[in-house]
Length: 471
Ligand code: SF4
Figure 1 (cartoon, rainbow, N blue to C red):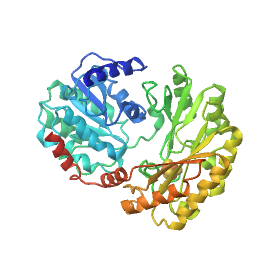
Figure 2 (cartoon, rainbow, N blue to C red):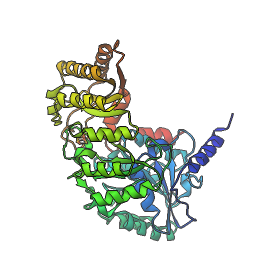
Figure 3 (cartoon, protein in one colour):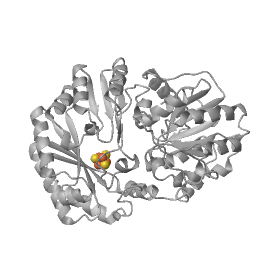
Figure 4 (tube, rainbow, N blue to C red):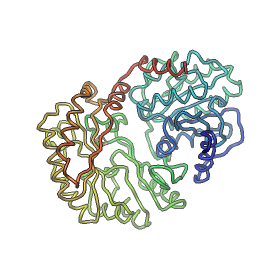
């Protein structure tokens, strides 16, 4: 059997061999280990990570290499196989609270002191960016030197300039660098900054947001991803995407088509990323263009009220056999309460239409434990799923509601573990003999951890950090 280290070396080589778009650079003064605190598969499915990789590598004298959390093996960068402590900076793209602890693990495995105050100028500077910076970075503050808050595109140039200057001093001017970074609008530096408001890109057309590396080893296998908008018109009360991006912003159709043309030189598979892609004002024109280019397409999610026959036909022609819908609950009363004003009939009509067009199954996203949920609401969820299953095979993903900061439901709490267990048992029982319905449930312990971290403060990860430091 192969030694673990040998396995990772081979795996790195295999991943690199299958990638198109990887950036190799000669050694320069400012080197960044750009880390995703989850697997390669998850990290390379994230457009924000691609964007950071691209922007940090734009100047000649800054070099960024990627690293991922792949278990208890020392993380090494993909491009050169170097350990994180050999870089002048270590940055993390962070989008999910449960990955916080993986940041600590990656630092610990790299023998980099976890607490900022324990690091000196010989250690890399540690920074973060990503969607969590819009609403709560407090759990990570003791461990980081600085953070990109909000949308980073307009910040990279300035930050890169500072990093080049800093690297030339071999890290000696660390305090000076941090002081200067804290003057940049959108950069938070513990000890130097007070509160920092998230940065937003006013005109999305100024920055293309697309896949920078194509690989078969992601959720979007060999697909070229194109971001079409940010923010969401609907502002459902529980949803972070609906609230942190301020007003919805859309790229122009010509900008998107230019990106698609670049993507089509690499692959015929195009994926469109947005909170609600079908809200795109020129959605029909976009679909017609994609059809004319014979592209195989996929959308990150589709709002049920805008799914038409021609969209379904486009998806089916692209090889998609399953449609994902997010009713969140089967209770119309509760759906209104969360500000998702769509009635059940709209879902059933679309499921019927999807069947007619040739879809084979439907995936439904459901939440349990929403504020003010009653037993009657859960009964209605069961009825809703049963009605849907009369039309087509149904797969249901059930997730406990997690109150998120910056949303109108922020003040609520997650259901007690016992209550969640009871609700899950109720749903399991309701479908135990129903072969047309498959239910999957997110872990209760993980949901509670996520809820604590989402609203956690600077102390919440200190015990974990201590444990890891003494390993
Ligand atoms: S749940 Fe969907 S429709 Fe509602 S705010 Fe979030 S992204 Fe928009």
